[in-house]
Every structure is written in structure tokens, then in C-alpha cells.
Image 1 (tube, rainbow, N blue to C red):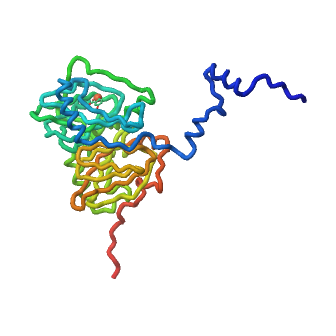
Image 2: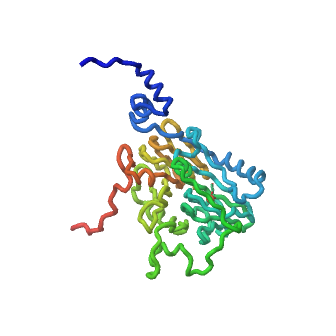
Image 3: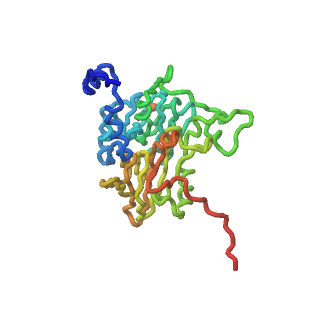
Length: 365
Ligand code: GTQ
Ligand code: FE2
């Protein structure tokens, strides 16, 4: 059979396709390049020092007169994430609320967590009518589409770390937002029998269906700290030290569908082994001083510093002090990565890989 006459060159054909908003797979150079050799870490290892952020927050208190519905929150943009975000999925910031102020009630599809840096327990966030006191190191959840307002009836400025799944949610184009109708603040559940938090506890009413979403709302430091202390003599994770995940007791799963929160104790002089994983994380130094080495960059942190560890970047943590403990609060996107079975870690999967201590048996004589 005679070969059909070639009427146009491949180049001409590709140009024609382009006019029609089509690309031939052979032209899709970016796809192959992106896949070969695995992910390039998205964003940079970057640190926002408290020394600078604290000054800017103080200025924000003057410039932004009332926190109102526009929260007085300084949000950290990773210089390597042009779309905006502290990592490619997570947004971290520090929010400050002056004495007597109210951050108005609203809700959004973005999920958020708050880790308290300054507050005396009379400061509170209301979540779906539940009053959640905010004491240092308390973790308060405002899950997706829950009403929330923040109030500071004290005489002191309060502040906390905000972490939201903003870049992930905007990537999926799922933003919805509503101000609370009619008032600055939402109605509060005042009957103890209608409080939500204990419905996530050891016992629950037999006549109610158990709600798995939006519970619990508060992890009080007074409950978490003793657990952390009690586990401090264990070997811990070789990569993360004595790291605890804030679990959802209703599902047994992560803190929120998109966010996993961790509290991590590095013992004096502890230097963890180096690893990398497909989840990204944002950190808040809650105490002590240390260095997190990410690739060839050393992030030196002290209390109230925030930093980002991009996904698939090699990293290790060091407690620089030989006498003091260091405490890191962090939030990672492993629930998103895990939801589709994409969690990978090198040199080994360390999460949930070790056995619980064995049943003690007396030594034979
Ligand atoms: O406190 O409700 O940092 O809605 C960003 C968005 C805080 C909040 C942020 C928010 C909030
Ligand atoms: Fe909000």
C-alpha cells in the first residue's frame, strides 16, 4: 500500500491543537519531568522568628483598631509557594486579640485549629455554641463549617497560633463563608446537659445518636501534658522523639479530616534521625530551643517561632540544650495524603510501626 502523503509537519499539527486548547501527550513535557525522581519539595524550609513577628503583631494592634471579623492574624507565606500558603496545603499564622475585643462569629468550609500561646483561661472561643476556654498550650478545633467567635474579656492581650487547610481547600475550589446572622457573637449553650465536649468522653447518653463529626472541640493542656510526661521515658520515635498525635476519639483517626496535630517533646540533647515523607508540616516552638535541619538549611528556633517543613524534604530535629526540654506543636497534612493511600516515608515508614510494651512477665529464676 502506498504511504499516505504527509500534508503537515508535527510542529504545524501541535500549533493547530494549541489553538483548540488541546495538547498532545507527547507535548506534555512538564508531566514527565514532574514525575521523574519523585516530588521536588514544594516550598522552602522557612522560619518566621517571634522577635520579628511579635513586633509586627504589636504594630497590627495599633493599625487594625478592632479585630472584628477581619481577624488580627499575621499569616505566613512560604517564599517558595507563590499560590500562597505556609506549605502547599497548610496556612499558619499568629492571631492577637486585645483586652475586651471580640472576633465576630462566622463559619467557613476551611478547617482550623488554634494552639494557645497567651491567655488566662477567661479568654475563650465559642464553637457551635460550646464555650472553649483558652489556656496556654490548649488546642481548640474549629472544624469545617462550625460557627466560631473569639472573645477576650480580660485585661491582657491574648494570642494563639492558627493553622488552616486553606491552600488545599482553595486548590479544590471549595471555599464557602457565612457571617453569623444578626449578632457579633453566637448564642452559648448554658445548660451543662447540652454541652458537647463530654459527649466525646468515656460515657455518652444512650438515647442520642453519637455524632462523629465536630467532636471533640478542645484538648486541654492539663489533660495532654501528663500523658506526654508519662511517656517521656519511652524510646519514642527515632525521627520525632516523644511525639503524640491529638486523635479524634470518635473515629480513632486524625485530629480533623484534613489536619493532624502533634505535640512533640525533645529531651535535653536529643538529636533525631533524618527522614522525609510525603506529608508537609508547620511547626510552632512552644518551649525550649532547638535546630531543625531541613536539607542543607538549619532552622534555629526558640519559643514562639514558627517554621515550615515542605513535603519530601529530608529533616531532623535537635534540642540544642543539654539541660532543658524542648516542645514543638505541629500540624501536618498526612490525613489528606493518607486518604488516597499516598503516604510514603524514607528510609522507612516509622508512623505506628512499633509494638506497644509487652505484657510484663516475671523473669524465670
Ligand atoms: O480566627 O476565624 O487566621 O477565619 C484565618 C481565618 C483565623 C479565625 C485566621 C479565620 C480565622
Ligand atoms: Fe474563621
